[in-house]
Length: 168
Image 1 (tube, one colour):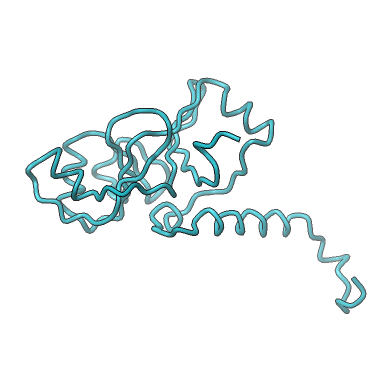
Image 2 (cartoon, one colour):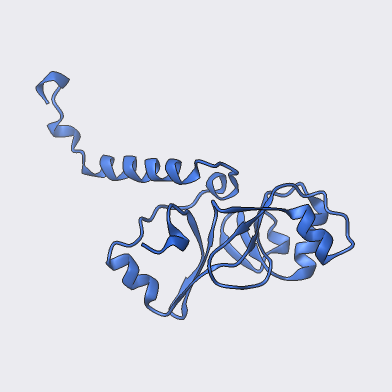
C-alpha cells in the first residue's frame, strides 16, 4: 500500500540479520547520468541513461553495474553494487559497461522485510542481468507475468491434464 513501492521492481542488493537494502529498478528520473555527472566531476561522461529513484531513503549516488573490478558488493554473478566515487568515476568514464545509477534506496531494519514477506506484502522472483539492466517502461508488467507463469506452472500437475482440452 506504500505509494513509494506501487508497481515497483526492487533489486535486493543486500539482505542479512541487520536489515536489507534494495533499489527500485523501474523509476527513472528526468535527469540523465551525464547531466548529474557534470555537477559532480569534470571527467567527461560518455555514459547514457537516466538516474533512477532507488527508493524513499536518502543516500549517496549508487550504481549497479557489470564490472566486477569496480564492485563493493556482488549482488549476483554479473551484477555489482558501488557507491565509491573513484569506482563510479571509472564506470562513467568507460560508458560501455552495463550500469544503472540511483539516488535514494529502499531500506528495511532487522526483521522488517521478513515480516512484510510473511504478510504477503511482496512477490519474489530471482533477478536476472537482463531484468536489472533493462530500460523498459513495462518492466513491472513483464516481471509480474514471469511471476504469474512460474506460480501457475508450479500448481499444474501434467498427470491430470486431459489429452483433449475440451474435457477441461
